[in-house]
Image (tube, rainbow, N blue to C red; front, top):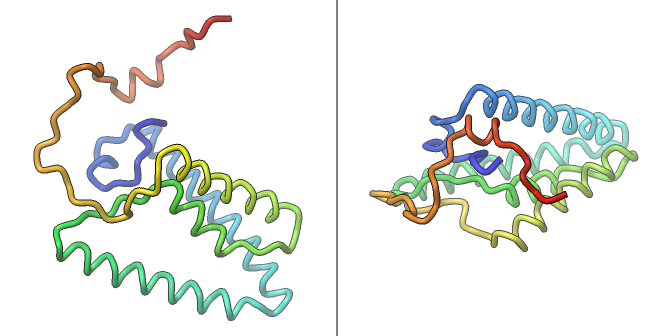
Length: 150
């Protein structure tokens, strides 16, 4: 999962397995949001969340245009996916409570372990590989055996 980065340049190098995982992840998020939207419709709050989605997506589009004009590229970190999902999930049933907990944990783990890096970054013009770190391909990761001591 080290190479599962939502960055357009990295995504161009993904294997079929990574793309399958990505589409399964997107399908899961759509299913969760469908359950959430159904619950919101039942309690009469759907219009407020639709308004929030329009504001959020409009702000993201505006910020992306502004940052792209400055030469930055978007890099969506998993902490950002987690906190974004938390803002759209309400507590109408057990499944959504579990999903909210998972996404909040995703947000918290992303920030605590990796730091809250910016969503828009200046691209490295000539990335140099670390000479001390061996080159690992997606295929090597898939075929890698667990060598932890038992």
